[in-house]
Image (cartoon, rainbow, N blue to C red; front, side, top):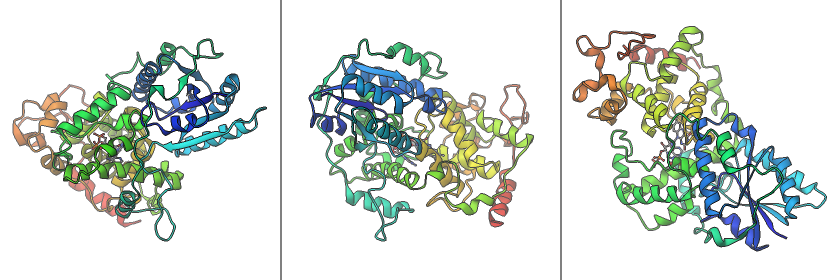
Length: 467
Ligand code: FAD
């Protein structure tokens, strides 16, 4: 009997171990993707539009044979499996709070069917899957550096030798409940998305990787913190949807010990680390990893809401913060250094809860990913596992001067400040006649700072000390 290959966050055909597992049992398979409304509702439009592009690319690679069905996976998958008389259903394991519950429910439903079918999990979207690594005492890691050491020692298998021809793909035409690709893409907001999303799919991911590897990897160690240079890989959306597996690129880096390759490998370890942390502590998707922060005092009320709106729209009067928030709006992506600066500003200068900013990021990011986002935020806020110490408050002006030395990044995103030469751009309030309008002003001029960083820093530290 044929197999059912259920695609989720592994939207590729090369280096996909699930295909090998299916081929161990059979030659023929049906490829299915479930449009799951539970996941679509909270996903930003940018992310679902990018997903639509990934599904188009996957369908093309499958020779037009991707079955798309809308509904709840625990109902849809057993129905599709029964429809083709499948002998097994194959997935890459999902370790997220929702994904693991969904899979357990689907597994139960498959087992309870008139003709029970196993759900076979092979691999995951991580180089080292959550729960693989434990400390010597047998506990999950809480600190990154020892995790990274164990991660490097553990290593990862070679890429799986798979591709479009690994299985004979069944034709889904006429399948009951089949959604046309164009209709699915419409439901995913492909035509109504508010930004140009990056080219999607496996081929685009590989092309991006080759360009980064050949042009920017060598200098990554030195350049990665510089948003003006913009030389990071921009692979995050592809990794998020599994258009490219980290194992594939890590294999490409085998033997490279230059600082660029070493640093970049470490970034992939952060991705796995946060997935591991969230797997063990799913409650940290919503709450503080360090629960002593639960008592932290936040600003509330109309003034706090107005400050939040100014932050979202890139009108805080702090150029590096505003440049980042405008990049996020325009591209659905923000440079990592600036993600830290904007997150620090929201939590420590505006005294707003990290989850408010994290939620906004998730509506805007094409690469929005629960473990990396929620823990990136908590790292900055100080409440995370192995977080930046609470007393480390980023000075947004000094950060701008250090990481965007000539102000080119700011100039790219803030047209109102483009006329300012060189470093002056970091302190526009010092210039005669500059930026008189204040918060709420919509004259189009660049605003005055909505808060005084030195004062807010003091307030933040006092509140932290009280914990
Ligand atoms: P590169 O520098 O080329 O890094 C390569 C890959 O390593 C990235 O694609 C990513 O998969 C991984 N990576 C790099 N840095 C980190 C990190 N700090 N934590 C975890 N993984 C990392 N990353 C997301 O993928 N999705 C998010 O929703 C997300 N939200 C974040 C929110 C905040 C407040 C912060 C501080 C960081 C967040 N990050 C998130 C991590 C990081 O900013 C992005 O992964 C990175 O900017 C993506 O760009 P890149 O692919 O060019 O990265």
